[in-house]
Structures are given as C-alpha cells and as structure tokens.
Length: 529
Image (cartoon, rainbow, N blue to C red; front, top):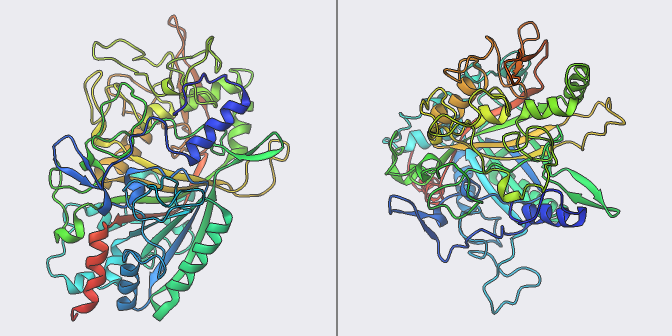
C-alpha cells in the first residue's frame, strides 16, 4: 500500500513492504499535530474522544476478543471508567484515534527527550450491545436514553440475521459462545505487537473483569496474521485463508487521521463512521454525552471453508483455469492485482505499483469502462462489496458515489495457514473482526442484504436469477450460479452447484462509545437507580 515499488519486486523488498503495512506508519500518512482533525464541514474530529480502531488501522499482528456478561452493574460501570482514567498503572487504557505518541510513554529505543513515535505494545477497545446497555442499568438511570433512529442496534444481530443471509448453518441457533442469547453484553478487543504483550495485558484484563464481580468472561478467541517463511524466518503477511492479499481497498475519510493512496473514489464524510451532529441521515443518540463521537460496529466470527473453495476451483479446471476462476470470483488475482487493470495475468508487463492496486473504476460517468463485466464480472466479490461507479441499488448514476453504504472493516484471520499438502487437517479457519459504520441498517445490512445476496443489485445489468456473491454469499447448491461474461458476444461461462464458502459462527451489533461516553457510564455509579 505505501511503498512505491512494483508488485513483481524481489521477495526481500516485498517482505519489508508487508512488515511496513502491518507494523509501521504508512509512508503517505500525515501525522496529526494535535488531538483534532478537521472534517470537510469544518468541525473538527475530536480524535482524543473517538475509539482508535474506528479511524485507524492498528496493523498489529495479533488480536484477542473477550465476550463479557455483566455481573454486578455498579462494579462493571466502575471498571469501564478505569479503562479511560489515564492511569496505565491501574488498568490498560482504551486506545483513541490520536497520533500514536499521545498518551503513551516513550517506547524501547525512543529518546525520552523527543516526542515518541513508536507504536504502543497494545491497543484496547470496547463495544457494548443493547442488552449490555440494559444490563449496565443505563436505561434505568438515564430517562432521556434514546437510540430510536438505530433500530437494528436495539433489535440485535440475532433478530436481524435473515436480513444479511445468516441462515442455515449460519443461523443464530448455531452461534457459539452465547452470542445472540442476550448475555452477550460487552466485547473487549485487545491488539498486541507480541505474544508477550498479549499474555501480559490479556492476563491483566482477565483479572480486572473479575474484580468485585464486575463481569464474567463467557467467550474469547484469538486472531493473528498469517505467517510465511522468508529466509528461514516466519514473517507476517496480509493474506487471508483463501489465499488473497487483503487490506488493499481502504475507506478514506475526509478529515480522518490516516491518508491512503489516491483513487477514483470520493472520500467519505466522517459522519458515516463517527456519530456527529452534522450527519445527513440520523440524529445522534441521546443523551449527547453518550452518543456523540461514538459509532456502531458489527462483530462477526466467520468460518471459511478453504478446502471446499480449493476443491471447487479444481473441479472446473476443464472449463476455466482454476487461478483465473479464483480471480473472477474475487475480482482480484490472489496477489492483489485487480482484474480491472489486468484481466489476463497477475503479473502484467512492467508490474503494478501498490499505489495503483486500488486506483481504478468499473464504470465512468460517461458510461464507459467495464459496465458489462468483461474484465471483472459484475457479480464478483469486490465489485459487490464496493461497486465504485457501477450503477447499483442505492446508487443509480454511472460514475456516481456509493459512499453512503461504505464500511470500514477491521479483521484478522484465526487458525493456522492452510497447507495444500495437508488439506483435511480438521482445523477450523476463518476471520474475526468488525464492520464499522454509523448506520447498521444503511451500511452493513444494506451491503449484505442488497449487494451481496441479491441478484438484482446491479440494476440495468441483468445477472442470472438467484446469483449472489460467489465468495461470501449465502448459497443453495440447487440454485447457485456465477456468470463470467465473455468477449465478442460469446455466451457467459456459468458456474453452478456450489455451496457457501463461509459460515457465521458468531455476531453482535455493538455500540462503540466515546471516551466521554465511557466516563459518563462510569459516573452513573454515583447516581441512585
């Protein structure tokens, strides 16, 4: 993403690039000079009040998610307050969107006389479900509490599962760890730079949860970057279990603290991801101390059927090259090169720099480009998740913006890397993480319901009935179909009879409170119920 080198660079250089993407500041990122960042409307983003992973990718190699149920409400509220007290010696602190040096002591190798610029060794964030807000007695203590414009959050992930295709094996009745059962109150997410840091801070948190009976841990899961050997040493990669490079298409926010390589897409307004007074389609939840500068996120644990996916590719090798089919399904070759720029090969002559990997369009304002999907099928995964200028449901103009439905994804694999030499090892693999947005209905549910699982999403481009996202759609083998258009009027290649390659194992609709909101919740302990 940040290095100006061709995709075909030597392995050593590419390895260093991956490390920078995972652990280092992006070369084209503009560091903040204070705790505020100005949005397009002119009102500043209060970075010190906003949870960090809403606006920043931490690029740490491992994560642990704790699911908690409230024990003693007053003790639970008090503990949440300790996480934003500023006293690191008392409890690990919630990470905000401020620049890395703000609020942290100088790290190893830093000169204490200078402003430290190294990353901390951990980042911490929390999400609270609607049942969690109830269990924390917030509704009892705050008569003005209102999340009326956010019905999906109040209803919860289990209640609305069918809207996003979580049926069959993905139905909430199969979810693990108490998700969707009403006891899934608080999600605590700990990112770490090392196994030692994960153990140290994870143990501290586990002990804090138990103090005074505040919380009971009912589930936890770890994720980590997939590794590959480089010069005899394990090196983190940006790949997911299906073998594709991940993290290429990043959602750029006006006034946000991070900068990404420019592409054809407009920057998103900050209110699409941070609850703000200048939002166009919602009112900030009440009271404002609770709602302002917060956000919403959908936490998901998704199992990936890597063996089934690879077998599926090979089963069609007499019709289409398996790697070309993999590229058509995703919209990118597995090394990240988009079909829109290189439809015939993942190694185009002269290479493609990382800055160019996300700089393309499907349909331009004059209607030219790839409207029929000859280069990248209209039904391909990345084209459904982010149609760019393709006229689709919710965005009907060629070259128009689909920004109001954009998502920020913060995820990491779980389980070991897939070994094609030992495909049937019985080990579960998948993804853990959050889809972040200000409106679960208009962003997450719209994308999953209309763009991923609906054959009519592309408007004037008629896809086969019952066709869905071939990678993450909810498929029925009796009717699943993926059409690959061919040039010169030749009939499309139609791939049929495949099952779903992903299964939802857990989901939760979470509110991501601001630092101010967490302090507000903690101070409720001083008020009578």
